[in-house]
Image (cartoon, rainbow, N blue to C red; front, side, top):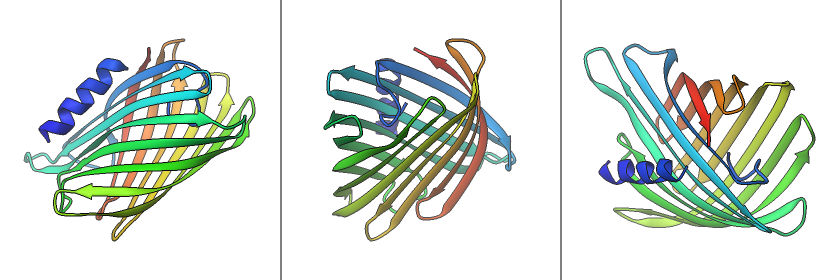
Length: 219
């Protein structure tokens, strides 16, 4: 757990995903529970994108903590990751991605994934963007390691000048299947401040779902 906290602090200090950005851009967000649970939830995330010619570098992290009214921890999970993309042309790119992942209630709470892959920009219009990535690599745990196959689908639709909806789906298949889906509606309060409603569903291996509000700051 300490390793995750240190990783996230470092990532936030540097402070959206590689699918979308075409220039240096960063964002940090912090939020709490909205519905579907008692007690309280704290949800924080940070991302930073660096662009240099054909290369794009991404650092990101996220942590969610949820407790019931009696103080019992119901959810404690997060990740810190780094990724490098190389553009082959306007539509295609290759990448290398690493991610440290923590889940208090998993058999092996800590794990590390490293995987090279291929990405394709399905759509790039003024109001709609979509990308898909496939990769194959290795997942390391304290007890063992094994191959992993990954697929990531990202969609974003801007339906008003200051309002957009996005969905990020990640599926990883090894001896166990990891699924994370994040659906978010975001409103630009100002040039540098956003307000969002986010629903996160994770299968790892038990299914966890939380809906929260987030206040974001673009850096």
